Image (cartoon, rainbow, N blue to C red):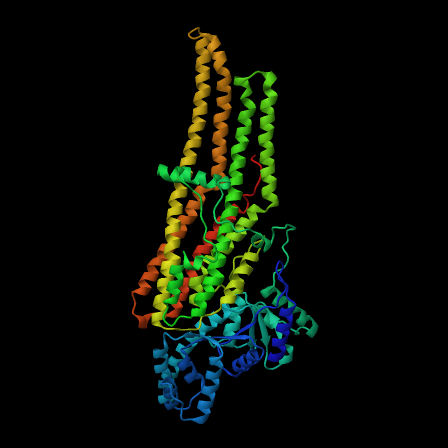
Length: 627
């Protein structure tokens, strides 16, 4: 039955469409803990089909082989652990079969607790009648299998479970893993050994109880849809040449930002920085070419990956070529789209009041017979606003910026997760109502890299924790601390200036009334008041109009809210920084995979909670005319 399902998966993958790219079948990879006969059969079938084989082991390789070779005495596992062949022929045959499969696989060994687990394992063989020894060993193996099972779930698009559909009490076992996968949003192909021909696809734990099983035809259709959902990418909902992957693929590389789209960042610099040099200095951004980032800003990260004890050179190369290069490309595009969209709105907010002022300037500077000149200039400014708005809408600047920025951040934070074998499960990606291709793209990049071929021991965990701290937590902490302070200043400065301009308008109107009263009393010449009245009229309109434009820019930029979001993110990152430092203070023997993996997941979750927060705010701030 496994062979039939594997063939069906291959066929479904061949027909899978990725909108916006050339059709090509996806690479297929089997992940298995290689624990029992079913796992071995699946591994052999996958290798026969030239699939990649990846094995997240609950233990180090030697201990895993010693346990799963099912020895009867303690002498044989001791021999295996010492690198020798066991004396018992059947045990040796089973051990050789396991090793033969591991030789053909990428193996991610969770070996940091091997010394403890090995002692308890040998104790069960030395004292087979001791229930406490057996219970302690089973407790440790369940915990290790649980960790390996979580890795398998996070790295899988589809889970195949040969299971009775009922038993879930064995922590880390097939049933427990299947339920965990379903809870994480990973679909499960469930094969009941009692009726293997009636295998089915389930998406939730509740679906396990549904009867009767689906027909073969409907099941085949479900399987094709499942593969399509897993690796395919449907056409975007929007009928636009810039929708879907085209939001990224049709962009031309630009190594520097354009001064013509610096308006928003200049506003942020003017009001957000405290030093005059920073307020009026250059804000031009320079971006590394994708093929240069590995030897440029990404070099320290790649050096840290290379320095991981027993690290996988393939992973380092893949991160440099497939992750960092794509990040550099996407980050530059997202920054450009951000400049175009936000500066376009600042332009609209600036031209709106300017059009009003131009329309009024004829009053003090020319007679009514020249009003048409000022009206023509006003119309021109209004038309510029309309053209700017329509071009921004047609180019999808707003949506493309949000989409490409999400993808850039996914890629920015990927290396530390990949080194630890941590990933967001299929159902764990943030969902977007409009445009989910960034999540699809990021998942495919991570899947392409896969698990490293490493032995995770105390030394590896220490180096990985340092990598997480130096290249993920600390840079983001410093970024959000600086951003929060800068945006708080910008909000306060814009708000203060707008209030002062409005107050000045009140003063100007009051001053005019005072002068008018004095002229009525004969204190000053009425002609002077008549001459100044036109300028007072313009200022009475101009000052609140400019104040309103500043308030609109402040509302659009939402500086105070984003400052609060960054401040809260920085606090969470500070807590993660402290926990990571405490983790590093332990000895190598005390370091565990699960706590560090959890720190990596929480770091990932913290940064993406911030992205979701500000994107939720900006989602409704679209390119529009000022009103």
